[in-house]
Image 1: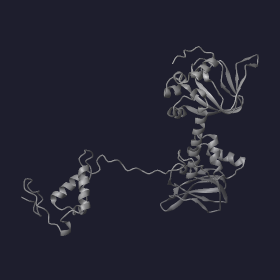
Image 2: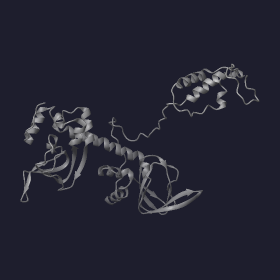
Image 3: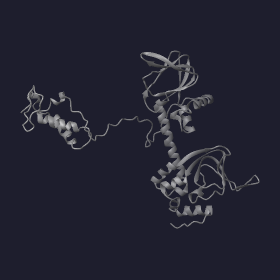
Image 4: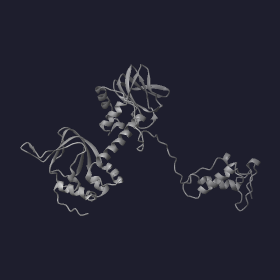
Length: 381
């Protein structure tokens, strides 16, 4: 028996199901609904979550028969199984590696005292941690000046932030609105920073900053920050590739191998008179001079240096690390400020295999290295 309108019991499952009375407009499925039903039912073949709620009754009214309704409901319950979450689009900021056009940004001159204050203010902020000094200077040079008047609001609580500010001078209140009341929770006086996370991503401002007195700020927007950072890294990558390509021992590397080497090199700056490595230390690094002058000393006897060799830009030294890890026979010192590309040989071998195998690809350069170092090593390939 079918279920009566007043009965709370279902009909007998063995009885045929009679179609529900529908209006003429509901009697047939529209082509788009039929196609959607077919796609949804097809997607319902896989297994997965079972917590999908059925469609609202208002949407079910478009199904032609009870059987159609049941089929559509079964397909709807399977909807969403094993479907990937929708992607969250991210901002595309800065130039791409394949872009060859020169990227430029505005430069705002600053005094040495202003640069010094910017360095001190930003040294512990998250977006600036780990940045090289040269990159920091480029970022500081792009910060624009903003003059404010008393009672002027710099940022508003809840607005999407995309600017970072450093206070040069002036007094600023920090206001937070709660229960329809603005409360002052702090104050900046002639120093401080706010909005640094806006350099990394867009987020609602947690507080309102209002000038109490006349003041002066240095500001930077997220797009400029990212553009400078990405451009600097691309230029650095190309520069390092150029220096590595200048070393004859690595000319036999394939293009993919040359790119991998960038993962095991770093730029390091040495101060005047600083020792780069000492005689007797294990040879585990290889060096290329990027700028400045390096002095190689064979030994010091009675305060007198013997066997001095000098290296300049694009010269390399410490090449004994490429064929052995025996103790150094010389010492290296920075003459003035020196910047070097430093390669960790053990890390290089983990990426590309033994350096000996790489060097033996070009026997002329390999034999030249062996002759230079005076080391007896089997040169058979």
